[in-house]
Amino acid sequence: MAGGRLGSFFPFSYFRSVFQGGQREIEIGAHTIRSHGAAVARNHMHDWMILVILVVIEVILFVIHPFYRFVGKDMMDDLKYPLKDNTVPVWAVPVSSTPFVSQGIVQFSLPNFHALHVLVTMYAVLLPIVVFLLIYLRRRDVYDLHHAVLGLLFAVLITGVITDSIKNAVGRPRPDFFWRCFPDGVEVYDRWGDAICHGKDSDIKEGHKSFPSGHTSWSFAGLGFLSLYLSGKIQAFDRRGHVAKLCIVFLPLLVASLVGISRVDDYWHHWQDVFAGGILGLVVATFCYCQFFPPPYHEQGWGPYAYFKALEELRGNSNGAGPANVQYHQNPTRGPNGETFTAAFAVDQDSNATFDELESGRR
Figure 1: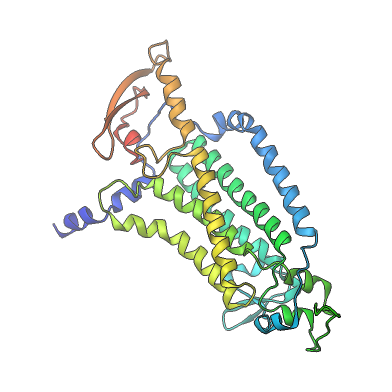
Figure 2 (figure 1 turned 90 degrees about the vertical axis):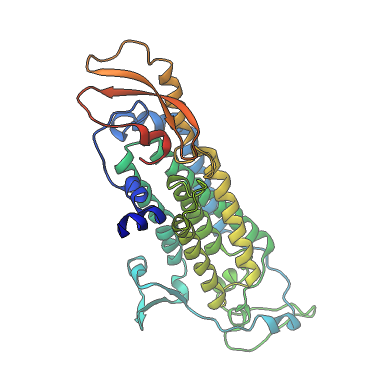
């Protein structure tokens, strides 16, 4: 009895229906990687080519020198924060060749800074892809998997290109710029009062890349996309008031926020850098998500546009000839908010699967 009341407040059964398998069902819109994966990829061949171009642009932006902004002696008062190593969670050990462990925290020396880009890829790209794969194993919808991965990669790469372009153009000094410029503490300025740095070239170059924060923008691009994806899948905005769903939606955003805070704590960024990076990543993620999926609050927000387009195309053929053991049905279903609409299904006569969950988003 108590368990029944608890279930009415927390939609655990709904969450299980998203990630767990169910009865054997054959829908017109359910296409697997083996049957339709190559065709879907070919249909978006130009999109994948654009991704490759974005990677090349990102590499070029990363290699070129940023604008070396004038840094006067009076400006150094705000740029004398200690030059600290980056701190990374212990599970990121494999991404660095020479880490050392101290009190459960893996720290990277300054020359290994770029290993952190691999770390960002791990939690901002690979983690969402793992979630996409788990949902694919449940739904067997190659449209959903392909478009989720493609949208995620576009979000991260577009964010990276915009972020590094702004970094190079602005050339804002980092909070620890003084010690990058004068590692021995001896200040040298020219006759105009501009700093004449005698530190390592790589440290000085990175010292002019403060605005905006790349780690923050990438984190909010990847994890923000994941948050939108999950909110659509679990129908977080179905007007039923299940706050537990919002906890799942906010979790990726919390992780991205903590990444941004760590950049300020390590004195690699000013708070304005982190704030701008977070807004930038989240905005790009939203645009990329809406290219492939309806808004999360939409009644069909649990699936990609291509999935419903396939249903519409096959609905027109539902009255044609089909396999001997398959029947075609026009099945009126009711959405999560009580709305009624019709979708076409091909049902295996040997299967006991039900399709009410398909259009209601409980698959």
